[in-house]
Image 1 (tube, rainbow, N blue to C red):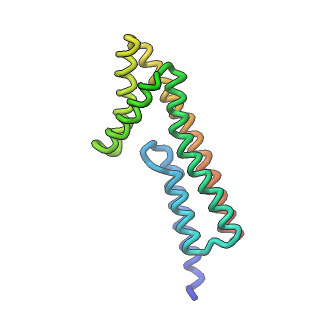
Image 2: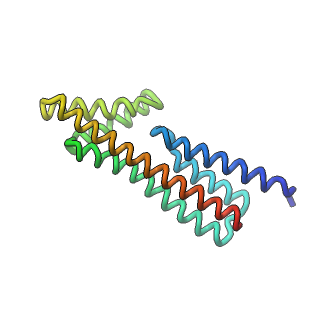
Image 3: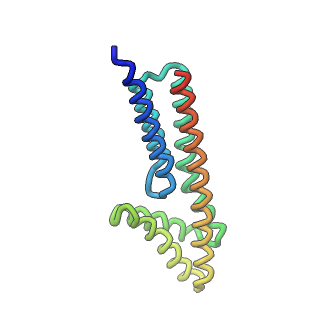
Length: 166
């Protein structure tokens, strides 16, 4: 049997890891929802899941997947609404991945909008149209941040219920 104080230490560590994930979601290259989810997984492994824990962890898993997909969808939808073509979006994704691999962690953040901008200037022959497409992408980025942060808050709140009731 382990000492009683270890439960408190585990709870504090998990809370701080989740807070780091939540505030890390302010930065697009930090997988905040994944950090929160991994923290909950660690909590369940160390403290036991129990019936309530399995339900909450399952729901947190769905939230993490939805939040991660929404992030990409909202940024792409914003760029599309700003006038970007599907090909420009595809080039932006490829450039973002390549930029992240070649110049982590900021390379993708620079390469993706540059690729969309360059292709839209080429396609439409207009600096203003390319800037509108990038503006749409950044508006989608803002929406995706709000979605990620809100989902992260719900995930942390669910864990608090699990820790308190468990």
